[in-house]
Image (tube, rainbow, N blue to C red; front, top):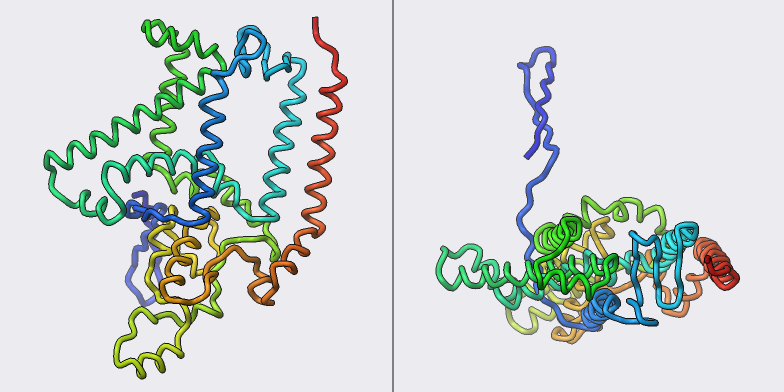
Length: 373
């Protein structure tokens, strides 16, 4: 842990030394598994994005790889489209589309990209699934970490690491397969004839996947990703975010109520719907407490919504104590129809117009371009 010592002197007092901590050590976050509507959507996006990423290089088109960025030949094949170095303006346009698309989705629905489709989220979900398969759910993993080393612990840890490494290497191999014909690359791997540069990029991308999804996880979202820091500039009071209904949930404590039935009912009336079970914190991949309000660490994955809805079902109270809502929606008790009407506000319309303009210009340019011979 880094620290800087600062000495301050005041008249009539002895010199005192204050230590400013630059880094804060934190315990490893062990998220609890959760099932529900939004969890199923997250896994649907995992399946969709990885089917595209892992499957696309193996597709053929016109006797060649369907998607191939051939740096040596300076040709970029995207199905029937062939791009050359002078066409890099389309790359700039694609980056602009991605940026304004992100701005638009963020203004409307917060960090929905982070929670469902970001590669860091997707691969973390995959690596955590492997971890649960070998080591069990949250409490089992905590017990295993504290337990002394044994043959059972060794094979569980080793098995997890083996699958993680294999998944990371396969991801690196697939990534390189977008730049080197993947069938040729596979033959080189099987014959141990992979070139140094190809080997480097397979190992580099594989190690990055292994490290980020296996170990760094929420640290990437909280400290390395710039999006977490500037997202607030794109939020407003009508942005849909994961929200805790303080008015309905506070004061907490129904879980701790004990006593006779009549007394319990009287005491229950004085507290909110939140039973303070802490499950919303246990399932959070970044370890935050959504009941403290909007925090930059929240990636909008809605795991806390799923688990809280399950608790509300068991308590026979309405769902939605934690839900996707807007600040104005919470404060003014807006209906769903009223919230939808507020979607079409100036910021969203500007982002949409710019996005539509860029996409239209790019498509027109692609349709009217002449083949280079």
